[in-house]
Length: 465
View 1 (cartoon, rainbow, N blue to C red):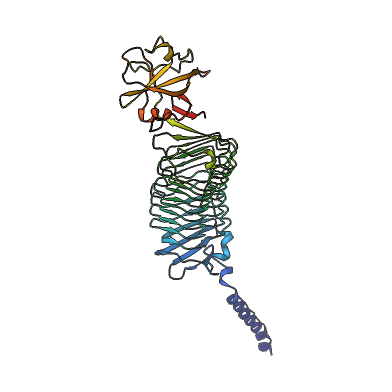
View 2 (view 1 turned 30 degrees about the horizontal axis):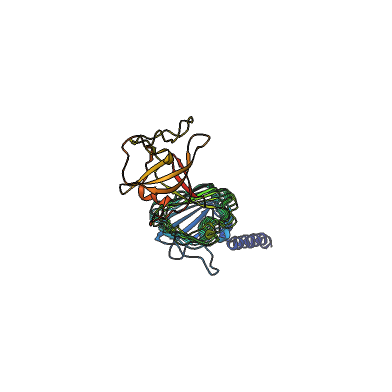
C-alpha cells in the first residue's frame, strides 16, 4: 500500500514536465531571437538580407540587380519598414523599383561600387533620409527615385551619371546640386517644387531640360545654362526668386511658359544661337525691363513677352542685312517696348585715333567749325568712312549725360564726301559696315533720325521716327 501512495506524485510530476516541454516547442522562433534581429532571409536568388535591432538593414547581393517590387509585390523586410534606420548594400549592380519606398525612419544609405542604376521610386517618400553616397559608375537614376525626400538637402552626383529621369528629386529638400560633366538628360519635373534650391548650372552636355524640370523652385536665384539646345515647356515656371539668368551660346529653343511668372527677373540676354522663342515663354515676368538678342532669332510668338508691363527695350544687333528690319515690339507681345539696335564698338576718337575721355565725370564733347575742316554752313559734321568714302552726317544735337559717361547724338545723312581731310577732323571710329547702315540703307536712302548712345559697353541706336 505504501508503494502505491508514493507512485502518484511521481506520475503527476512526469505529466507536468511533459506539458512544459510541449508548450516550449510550440512557442514561435521569432519571439525568442538570440541573434538580435528583427528579421532575415533570402531575397529570392538575388542574395540575403538581415535587419538588426539597431535599425541597420544589411543586404548582401550576388553581384546582380535587386528585384523590382511592383504590381503589389513587397520586399521581404516590408513588415519592418518603420524600423529601418540605415541601409548597407554590397554585391549589387542595380536597385529595383520601390525597393525602399516609404521607410519613414531611414536616415542614411551606403551603396556599393559597381552599382549602375537606381530604379523607379526606390527611395520615394523616405522623408527622413539625410545622407546617401552615390558611387562612381552609376549612370542612371530612374523616375521618382528620391521623390519627397524632404530632409535630403545635398547629394553628390557622380561624374559617370548620364540620365536623371522624370521627377527624380521632385519635392526633395535639396539646397544645392552640382551636375556632372557627362550628364545628357534632365527629365520632366526632375526638381519640381524643390523649394530650397538656390542655384543651378546646367552643363553643355545636357541636350534637353525637359518640361517642368525646375518649376516651383521658389528659392532659385541663379540659373546658368551652358549651351543646352532645348529648354522645355514650363522648365523654370514660377521660380519667383530668379534674378540672374545666363543663357550661353548653344541654347537654340525655349519652350512654352518656360520662364512664366519669374517675377524677380529684370534682364535677359539671348545668345546668338537662339532661333526659337515659344508662346508665353516669359509671360508674367512683371519687372522685366530689358531684353537683348545677340542673333536674329527667326522664330518667335506675338505673346512671348505678354504681361511684362515694365519691358521697355528690346535690343538687337544691327547689320545691313539684319532680319530685324521690319519687326516691331508687338511681334513679341512687348506692347510698351521699343526696338533698339546696338553695335559692338564704343570708341569716339580724334583725328589720329586717340580715344576721347568720356568717363572722367567732367567736361563735355564739343564739335564746332574750329576743329573740323568744313565751311561754317557745314559745321558740326562727323565723318564715317565706308570703303574709303566718308558719309557726312549732320549732328543735329550733341549732349552729354549728367555723369559724362555717354554722349548722345541725333544723326541724319546729308551728303557724301569723296576725299578725306588730313588734319583737325573729329570722327567716330566704328565698323563702317555697321555704322553707315544706321544712317542710310543699302541704296543710300535716308532711313530716318536716330539717337545714338556711346558708352564703355558699346553703342545703342534708337530710331526716333
